[in-house]
Each structure stands twice: as C-alpha cells, then as structure tokens.
Image (cartoon, rainbow, N blue to C red):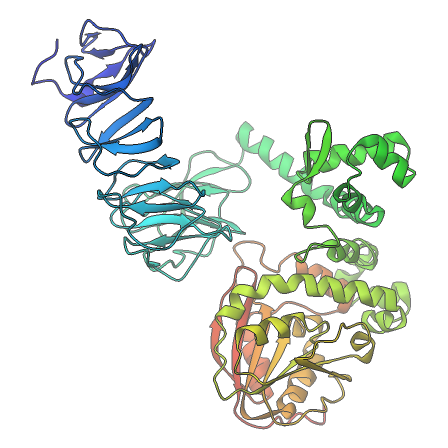
Length: 580
C-alpha cells in the first residue's frame, strides 16, 4: 500500500493503535506497540520493543537511534525524550541543539515552549536559545506571532516573540488569537477580545468558543446554547429555554440562589469557631478537632464534609489539609477575608430580613431594627467597628491593579485618604509613588483608635460630613466612601473634600461604576444591601459626573477594573454648596 501518492491526512490509526490504515487496509505489514498520527512530510512516531522512533509511509525507521518517547514532526523538528529529558531532533534523528528540558512542546511559528528544570516556562528558537529573558508559570504555543502566558500572579496575557506584551490587559483565562479575536475570561465570565485586549462587548457568558465566519457558539449562565455575533448579540438559539437540559440547569441555579444564605451563615459560624485556624496549627483529624473545640462528633463531621466539598480543605493520608481557598480565611493570611465572613454574617444578614420593607419604602431598615443609623451604631460598639475596619482593609487587595495605573503627578507631595480607616490603601499608594512626601488618613476618631501606627502616615480624626480640617492638600482619595451615602450626604462629602484641596488638586475615587444597562451582576445585587443598610446606592458614571460637577470637580480619566474602577478628577473651582 505504501507509495508516494498517498495523502497522509487520509491515513488512520487502527483500533488497537498498533498500525496505520489507508483506504480501509493496513498501510504496511509491520505491527508496533503503539503508533501516532502521520505528520508532514509523511512521518509517524511509533514504539516497539526496541524503543521509540519515527517511521516513513512504508513503516520503515527513518534513523537508527531509539528514544524513551517520541512525538510528531512540526516544521521538520520532533520532540523526543531520552534519559536526560526532553530534546529536539531533525529528520535524521540528530539533536538540533545540546539542551535538555523537564518538558518541551512542539515548534510552532519557529519557536517552541519549554519547561525548565526549575519549573518555569519560556520559548526557545531552533538553536535552543531563549527568545527573551522573562520566565512564566505557564506558556502556550505561538500562533501568528502571539502566545498566551500565565504569570506567577495567576493572570494571563499575550506576548510576541520578543516577550513583549501585545496589550496592557490581563485576564483570569486566555486563549490564542483566531482571526484577530481571542477568547478571554474575567471574574464575571467568558467573552471575546480584539488585538488591543479590549472586550468586543459588555455581556459575559458561562463559556464561548472562537468565532467561525463571524459567529461563535456560547453558553449562557442558564445553560442555554446560543450563537452570538461580534457584538455579543444573540442571533440564534441552539437550545431554547424550554428544553429539558436547560430546565435542569436553570433549576439547579435557582435552587442555589434560594439557599445562598446558607453559605453566608455556615462560613460565619466556621470562622467564629476558628476551625480553619486550628487545622492550620496541626489539629488535622476529626477526633482532635472535636476534642479541641468541644463539639460533638456529628457537628464537626458535617463541618469537615462542607469544607471538603466546597474546596476549603482536602484529605491526604487521613490528615485534613487546607487548600488555598481555606487559607484565605486564616487570621495570619495577609490576604485574609476572615473579617469579611464575620461582617456579612452578622448585622448585614439580620437587616436583609427587612429587605421587602426597604423596597416598599425605599428607605434603610438598620435604624428600624437597632434604633440607630449604622455608622452611629459602630461608634457605640468598638468590637463591631474593629471587624468592619478589618473587613474593609481586606478588600484593599482588590485595588492593586488600579493603584499601578494611577496618574499621580510628581508635584503631588501631600495626599489625604478621606475615610481611609486602617490606612492600608494609602500605604499601598505611598509604597508605589515614592515622590509623595506625606500621607494623611482622615476618619472617625473611633476608627483612628483602632489603627496600628505607621511612621509614614499621619492620622487625623473628624467627621467628613461636618468638616475636613486639612487645607491645601495636593490630592485626595475617596475609596468606596460615596456609595455608602445618599446623594445629599455624598455632595457634602465631595464639597468638604473640595475645600481640603488646593486649586487644581487631584481627586481619586475608587468605586464600583454601575453600567447604564447592566449585562451581568456588577453592583446589581449589592445595591439591595446598600439600600437596606444605609439607604444608599451604587452609581453610574453619569451620576458620579453630576455629583462632581456640582461640587467643583471635572473628570479627567476613568480606569475600569473588574469590579472597582478608578475615577480621576481635578478641582476646577471652589465648592459653592456650603449651606447644604
């Protein structure tokens, strides 16, 4: 059967994977332990009792060497494994360079991705030389001169063959470009990006595929399969909302929503019991945890079952081990969310019981339950205020990417963080922008008393609804402050901020910017909590622009984030709302 006129793409592998078939008949007489597909120019990787090697169309070896494992030829080069590791050979079976790697891919676009012995990934040329100096946690093949890499912070982006970023955006998940468009994922879901890393549309999906002649298959969060165009518009439904499969997924989604409060209270209780902290300290069996905590075996068992199925722990050699998710709730983790778990499962949870009344009256319900407004309540309960402040500090990690993109001019020497609480955010900013000489945290005296002092930051107590006793600051920060207050109070805060700034002073506002027409849950659910707790709301960019213009500011730039965004504004005149 073998001959020069055979189309290698019509060659198939036998059912037992020991030989090749062409037009329904064996391509040759020989049998192997295993065979792989034929690649150009008509060569296949095989293995038999002598080792691994490559054969031609007639089943004959193309060289005399034998390897531990062989793979297909790409661009005339094959990846093989010998007793020293992964290497590359030419069509004569000879090494094309003297390097060995812990792992190596195939050559694509003249480059090959490799994993070095230290576990890092990068690309090499055909002489085994690195294409660039950077190293990554993972790297994919080059396609049309662009490759996907994952950095050690877990984010993915595109690079060219010089190791340079193709665009400034990074994602939780990323795929190669296909006809100028790539699939990407952020915390909200999957979507498509262009060659500048910009989203083609605002909507997010459970998953999307590459575009095929201008249309792509996508899965909505309710389980429906749809066809979308390049604007994210649905042009055809593959499965309609009445299908059995979609109904099954939809019921599961709805059932999870209906009992979502279970997770809030389970985690709140687990954190209060400090179970994860005890596991971290070595109490890593059911028996010694039950003994340490004084809980009945049944109760500790259902807690451990929950932590396991939710991914907070895993069991290894009959020992309970914390996963990365579990470690985030540890007291000693600098990125902990322990106090967030305590915060949301206490007063916030109780007040949400009155959400119906909040919606009917469009007024906060905290004071109806506790007889006092939320922030006044915190002042009277220092232990609660401490939890609140620590929980807010935990969210400061969400701002790291925005901090790196702040435009803080060199003439800014004095900056004030209004409502800055713990000072964690301001400290991050001062560490990044060394030209700032002085940082001031302005907040309630009750908050200041709970602060660990930092020699680079000065703390000033007061009430930003009354007066900010600071003059001629070069810049000010309002981080997640304005969304806690109705428009009247928000205007007062901005007016007092204006008075604390010098003319042409800068204002940096960190807030969730609610879309005019939300396509996914960006602040939509959170607004219910803000209404019930504080009588406040999330705002659109136009609503922030209106507040800023009324108080003497002009927006200069907006930097979008995954959840929180950055609004950069400048003082253009004195605030004229002193009487309000």
